[in-house]
Amino acid sequence: MNVITLQLVLLAFALLMIYSLFLHWKKKNISDKFFFSWLIIFVVFVFLAMFPKILEPLMKELFIIRVMDLGMIGTFMILTYVTIENNIKIKNLESKMEKMIRKIAIEKIKKDK
Amino acid sequence: MKIFVIVPVYNEENRAVETINKILEVDKNLSIIVIDDGSTDGSLEILNSKFKKNKRVIITGHMINLGKGAAMKTGARIAWKLGAEAVIFIDADGQHDPKYLPEFIKQLEKYPVVFGYRELNKNTPWIRRIGNKFAGWLIKTLFNIKRKDLLCGFLGFRKEVYRQIKWKSCRYGIETEMATKVGRNKIPFSEVKIDTIYIDKYKGVTIFDAFKILGKIPLWYFEK
Image (cartoon, rainbow over all chains, first blue to last red):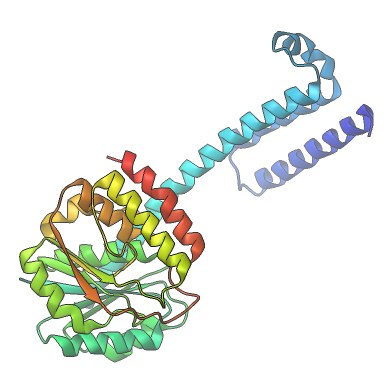
């Protein structure tokens, strides 16, 4: 797979993600803020995929030879951040749900009395 | 002492009825709180139809399955609201014989926490024996508490120690977490030997759960 093909794959992936985001935004599943922040992220992603040379000064600073390596490092950092964020949110949700369900269970006894 | 027996139930339609009947027979003064943890087999309906009119049995349920730890916590909260001074937890699946309840009650008069334990014997699966030994050693090293059976859910405690031993685990590992808190807070405890009854091979703590519990032990060490 040469560079152009890889760029096309990345472009297709980004467009698909933007389309999916757009559908969820239209169905009002996600907020404007959420949609536009991810839209910006994917537009930047497309731009960097199309013009990777733009990253060369940064790569020189970081002693990274290939754009792919920089991409991998960036991806791992983003994924780690998203995973931690998701984990915290899920734990919070679980805790709120547990409290709510417990409250209902206790109130049910009061009603039955 | 006003004591409530708490029975968390999850998909145990017939066994739960049998367990509750046995508890009712063992001690005529004991009240029971049954917490159905979102069963999908109609356990709650069956229990309601059998015990709704019995004033010694209080039945309620979680709308969805939250886990045994969460059901135990709901049970304890209800018991404190009803003026309980102590609670005893017993599994609904029949692996804990209610005949030991008087012994638990007797011990609760002397100690704030009472744990049940099953003796490991040649019938115990070897992986369970090794796991229990290793977890026991880890708990002893980190929390300075020597327990004979870290996974036994037949246990009781007095209200005064609830704040100190309140558990965070929702699924399995509650008993182990409780033991770590008893050790950390240097709470006096006693142990009551109970029969080893393994009912269902595919229920209860699996090897994956055991590894999760083992992984959590060091984390509990760093918790406040």
